[in-house]
Structure formats: C-alpha cells, structure tokens
Image (tube, rainbow, N blue to C red; front, side, top):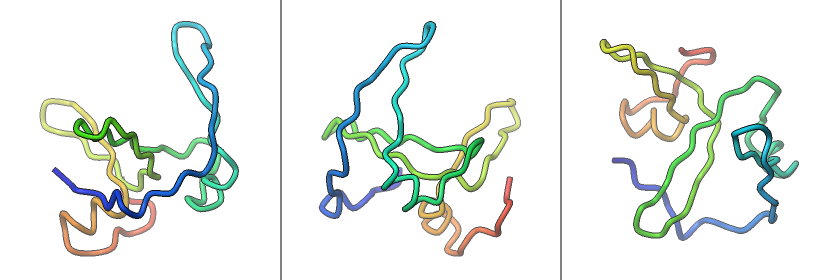
Length: 92
C-alpha cells in the first residue's frame, strides 16, 4: 500500500455529483486540470483512504495488465515509490 501525505492536502473547489445514465459523474476543477496537465482521453487513478474516507485523484501515467487479464493504472508518485525512478513518457 502506498501512503500519501495527507497533511499536504488543500481544498481546491466543491463540485456537485450528477447522474448520467447509470453512472455518477463530476467535473474536474480547472485548477486541478492545470496542475495535473490533464487532456481529453487522459486516464486518472483514484485512491481511497479507508481510515479518513478521502479520495485522491492523480493522473495515471502507466497501465499494467496482470497475467489474469486485470489492468490497473499508477501515478508518477506510485511508480517512483515502487520502482525508485521516474516513469518514461508514454509508458503503458
């Protein structure tokens, strides 16, 4: 499990959750779009802290597929912590 620095979290904006079909959705504040350099079709990874009930969203920079066919994405911070180095651009 990767621990994230909760003491560095700052509130950016409040957004309303809406429903589209059977899914819930929300828009990402422009401040976050700029900070993460998000573009249309980029993937994001969601982290959920069971203890604090906080959700953290980060830009996914790598997607891995397990032998059983499951896939998961990692953020730059996760890759640095797991592999000790910066991910290459376009890693998947």
